[in-house]
Image (cartoon, rainbow, N blue to C red; front, side, top):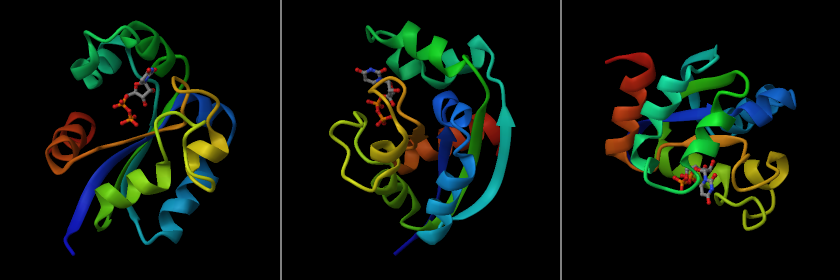
Length: 135
Ligand code: UDP
């Protein structure tokens, strides 16, 4: 299995709930290493740029408002199969459909305030890591 890197974001709802540590512990317990991280208040332009692929979607403006509503904790996770492993730990986009024991099942309230972001493929992981941490 390949060693990969993926971008993970703990979104403003989870930061406000004071569960950064609990979420990072899940990554560590699953064998993912945090190789870069920072707490950051995104600007509107940064949030819009990050979610540019969704700009035609009806939820885009609300998503941007949510992502700038408070600080986020952004990290690069590294490990075997890190992209899929992180997506598995996160659970489905809609927490009501997320498997029990996943981060979204345990910490998210709704499909828009859903606690975490994780890259969904090697190409997006590379672009998203570069977006926040450079090459
Ligand atoms: N989102 C939303 N409403 C929707 C679908 C998505 O607010 O009906 C938000 C949600 O925060 C989600 C993000 O847009 O995490 C990106 O959507 P995507 O389908 O890529 O889900 P993810 O990869 O985050 O599970």
